Length: 231
Image (cartoon, rainbow, N blue to C red):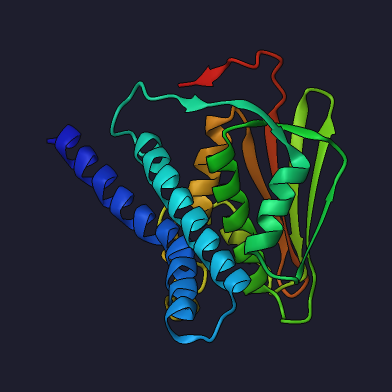
């Protein structure tokens, strides 16, 4: 009975996670499709909309597959780890995030699963933007230190009470339930980020002061074996 309950809980988590994660690319697909249908666009603008719809669709397809692996539907599934260009990753993030975000990086490469790292970063950035005033900058820094990569997402938003910082990575936990429902949050974003960090052999740590802001530090292992896969 305990095993059955555990499987049911995992499937419920999967459904909630898929709903949460599909929101961003589906918003892009619907928005660009609406522009194609109703806006007087020139050929270049129509082509740009089509490319953006295609890219969002591909991200949705890849992300759905990775989420199924992460949620434990198959205990022996692996993630594909490879060397990534930091500048390419940042350019992708710039194209799908707000001008409110500032990126800096001190390493030319990262090592990990591209789809999962993008998902993690988008979640962390969106959380920081939602917690911040409209005119406040969110900083994203990527660096290499000894045998680790570090990704830092820092905001000067409303912050998280100290007693909740160890709970916000639990599935469905929301500090402000009323605000989260209004914003469409499900309490799964940070839980997924923590799982992605763990899948890369790393960890996610949160430092926050109410009324001052929050810093999320993701530490990833810097591995030399380029064909490595993580179970």
